[in-house]
Amino acid sequence: MASSEQPRAQWLGRWGFLLAATGSAVGLGNVWKFPYMTGEYGGGAFVLVYLICILAVGVPVMMAEIAFGRRGQGSPVDAFRRMATGSGRSPAWSVLGWMSMLAGFMILSFYVVVAGWSFSYLWKTLSGGLSGGSVDELAAVFEANNANPWNLGFWSTLVTLVTMVIVGKGVQEGIEKSVRWMMPGLVLMLVVLIGFGALSGGFGEAFAFLFSFNTGSLSSAGMLAALGHAFFTLSLAAGAILTYGSYLPKTASIGRTTLGVALADTLVALMAGLAIFPVIFANGMDPAGGPGLIFMSLPVAFQAMPLGSLFGALFFIMLSMAALTSSISMVEATVSWLCDNKGFTRRSAAWSTGIVLWLISTAAMLSFNVGADWTLAGKTFFDWLDYLTSRWLMPLGGLGTIFVAGFLLNKNVMRDELGLGPRFYALWLLMARYVSPLGILVIFADVLGLYSVVFAQHWPYLLGVLLLMILVGERLSPRLRQALAPR
Ligand code: TRP
Image (cartoon, rainbow, N blue to C red):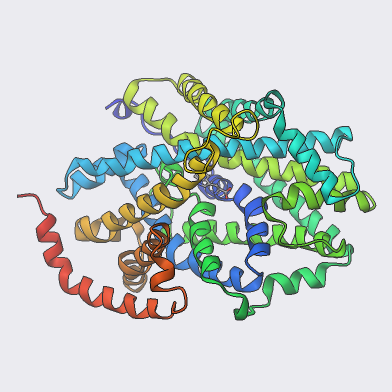
């Protein structure tokens, strides 16, 4: 293996992993998706379920991913194979690594298009191209921006280029150096924007909207969306966190680091809400504006306010940086695989990955203009990338990871690698074996159209199912192990 010739790169600073993994987690998901989902699903109740999903499903899966990366010392494919064979399991489990690399690639292919929106809106704000007094006018601007493939393609190509330049420079020189200033900068800008929101007069209303847990507005669709988003926002099951974990020094505590990343990610999402909703409410706009919320409603509000274009620019710089620190993490798995197994240098790996990515993302970009009616079952190529990753690849990959970690590995492997005390280890095991898988299975039940049949009105029954799973699982698991053991 080529990786044995050279010691694997490691994060340079104590904060290297934390900043990079938080950079991966904090992205368009936090600033673009979370606010509009909260708006759509009714505010505080959605936020509460989302927080529970982060803790109960996201954190245990993320811990397993980091542990696999650090112990497997390689790209997802190599790490899964080494973890499995190390416990006498089949090397075929590396299929989970292939799946996560594929997922990362597919997510990035549509992610750069949305990041391109952000870059282009930054440009529009600076060049005065964002004028228009109403949401309708801004909606027309949004449409015009999408309608020209050369324009939209220019911006997504730019995002791809910047991503590849950073990744090509390496783990320390490229990724770590860039997140070291982008992440603090992002938080600083968010704080300024929240201050701006506080002065706009809609702060009280925004606060109440985000934090009053009115359970009456809790719908099953909202709960499911919260669950899926917990996966997306933590960058799980796409190879990114695992590969970053492979550069984590042995001395770092995985439990504490994971909680740090999850907490920072959640705080940024809530802060984004506190920056956006006051402006929306102060201008009497609808918080349920959907995916266009920050591109249509927000610019109108910015124009109506003193210093609005300054804050508008600040907002889109912040969003673009959040997107970049995520996009660099999505290619790292593939780049590391090419370097370890195919003898590529980092630079050539980054550019080769970039070219393939550019081709796929260009196809995704065309879904907004010339390819708008290249649909299959009513979905454009862009929609398919989103649907396949968020509904299938990520949940499946998460389920596989947690299954291998919870049931298949030799007893001490995860205990040693996680470095938790006995109580916390037992808690992690309970989560990893039952709570997270149940959450993931619920996503699948929904995809297959079974969710509404079984649970829609009766979601408290899920607790009963959980108990049953624990009882059966704990009785069965020695046998389960035997059944799956090599002859
Ligand atoms: N977490 C990112 C965000 O919130 C998006 C994302 C999803 C991602 N899956 C990923 C980023 C995998 C990197 C790797 O915007």
